[in-house]
Length: 77
Image (tube, rainbow, N blue to C red):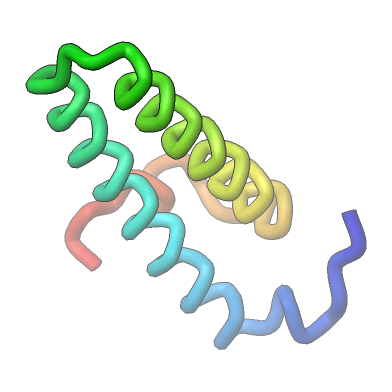
């Protein structure tokens, strides 16, 4: 993965943390939607969306390895 210096600046770090937390929230919403859904094609689509978001979350975590688990999961910000 190519990471540029500006990608790991403090401003970028702040923005990526916010984005990471928004992905976590959206994944939770999709998980709830899956519980209401019975159509296999739609369930597959929702699973694919979750998978893509989880990969994006991993990419962000890899960019900022110094951030603790508690910081990633802190829902107060």
